[in-house]
Length: 235
Image 1 (cartoon, rainbow, N blue to C red):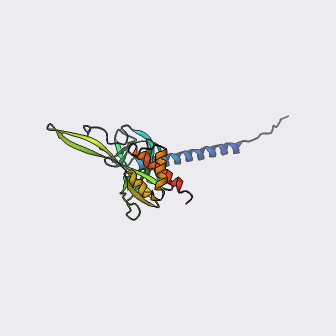
Image 2: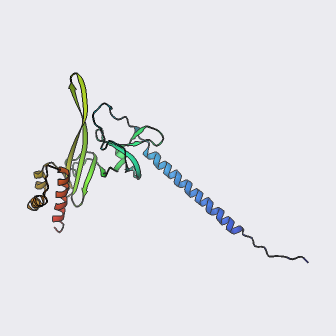
Image 3: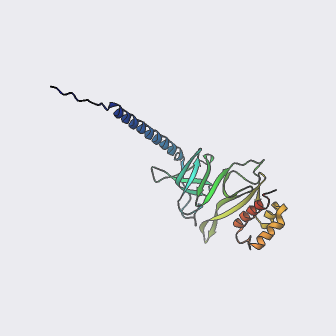
């Protein structure tokens, strides 16, 4: 007598597994293509030539490559090695496929971070940005009021004993944003005059906290602006 045993077919689960693998492969491939395309957008600038190595000092914000982030053409890239050339006001990245360095197109860079600094690109608008020209500005304080720093390096050339000597010189300019307008500030008086409605309070704050404006102008400007915002919070 023949004995017939029941037989269970597992074809459907196998088909489902295969379909899942195919979907996962297509998804991974699509992500790779998007990622590659995005990277290509970042590394399509002109080659960065730089400056003569004989110039004393360095033209960058920092002498070494620093890991930061950059928002370029609407896409934010994290953990990117950057240099910021303060002479030419350009952001530099190492090319992904070679030893060349690439210069990003300024018009496509909206912001970048490097060495604990947050830079934003501002386009000159004489109706609103008094004293500001198009370029990158270090965002020192972003409250109700604002504090920006414009960091620039120039090359000084001297003739010493019939030999040309060149070196980089640093210059920082500071701006306070109040009621939507930006004003250049340099001295303690210029800051206090801008915050004239709280001048007495701010003088007291400087005195009680032993803040020496001339000793650290940048920090003093930020602290005074923060204190002004705190004093006028309820107004």
